[in-house]
View (cartoon, rainbow, N blue to C red):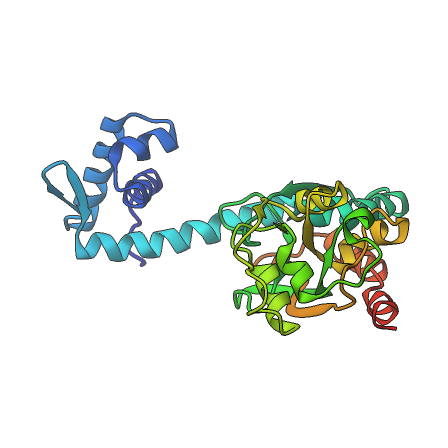
Amino acid sequence: MSPRLPPLYALRAFEAAARFGSFTQAASSLCITQSAISRHVRTLEESLGCQLFERHGSRLALTDAGNRLARELKHGFRLIESACVAVSRQGGALRLKAPSTLTMRWLLQVLDGFHAEHRQGLVHLTSAWMDLDAVDFYSEPFDCAVLLGNGNFPADWRTVKLFDEWLVPVCSSALRGDVPWTAETLAAAELIHPSRDCRDWRRWLERVGLGEAVDWQKGTLFDTLELGISAAALGHGVSIGDLALVGPELRRGTLVLPFDAAVRTGDSYYLVWPSHGAEHSVLARMRDHLLAHLPDIQQQVVRLLD
């Protein structure tokens, strides 16, 4: 016969205490008292016949046995939670996470079309600001996500590439004027950064050979591309933008290109979802719909370079 497992409540209490490094925080997370956590951990230690925690003054530390058990339980509880979530969500809405600017400038309209065609295929979209696009399918309540990245995602994810990122500088027509811009013109202009690490301007300047001529670290910092585009349209400077997401402004003339140079960064937008568990019944239909309604970036690049 298999050895009898310790009580599940004791295992859960220990895993929480190990994760937080505190009986008090573990108790708060599980909505029980600190004394209950202590009692459950003591029950587990008696059941296993070994010490799991050591106290060094006010600090709580795992023993070697406790560290090994905590690591395995973390993985085990995630598998249990994923199995339960996968079963319970099959008849519900697909929960999707996506960056805020992508949502406003492409995804929201595409999902409106999806819902019009698939009345039974409900997608609950969460539009989130993400400095670096990321999702944790174990701790966050999402079935899938759209992320910008280079394709190096975790091995236990499934992915579908949607479209590439192409960077272009954009500004108002009044700021650009009628005289062709040079490196000196750009160096004197106010740069608008749609990310706090200034990575987009840096990549564009380096790729077009202006990395030494223009100080990419100067300028105004914004949290999102949406804010950067809006500031540029109002004449506050030159922003760097994703060609797929500024297309409407370029066609309307509210934004113009001071330089006819689009740079492919090597990053792309991907639809990602975990490979463990059963795939949500709505996911395949939404994936096909997204792929059928991608921005026509190649046509914009060709038009830009002509």
